[in-house]
Length: 136
Image 1 (cartoon, rainbow, N blue to C red):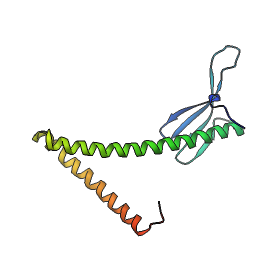
Image 2 (image 1 turned 30 degrees about the vertical axis):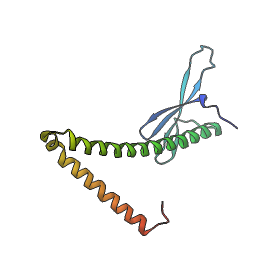
Image 3 (image 1 turned 135 degrees about the vertical axis):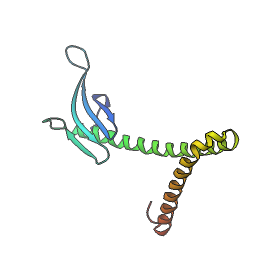
Image 4 (image 1 turned 45 degrees about the vertical axis):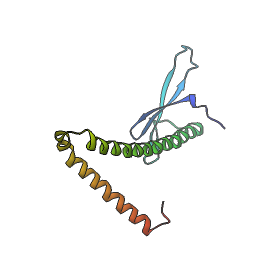
């Protein structure tokens, strides 16, 4: 049983979404949005709004959205990391070729601490992976 995604609207928020059922076939010819649930993608909770009972179609649409949203967020996380690598390279080039002494003085300590923290985490995590290779 396929669910038409246009029947639902997901108002995203930091940790999930408010789920609305869309009614565009009413006599006034205007779109009506009826909140049916609140979704938390961090813990997988789906809470019906008010005293509602969610239908199997509702749950299917919500679960599909949650899977797609998690996939998108994971892709964004990796994209952010690759951008961070590029920014570190750009920062190194800036520091070597264009930065003034005043600019370097303003950012050096913060950059060094952030890079030290990152290095510490990466080395520890790599050590854990090498000690326990079956984990991903």
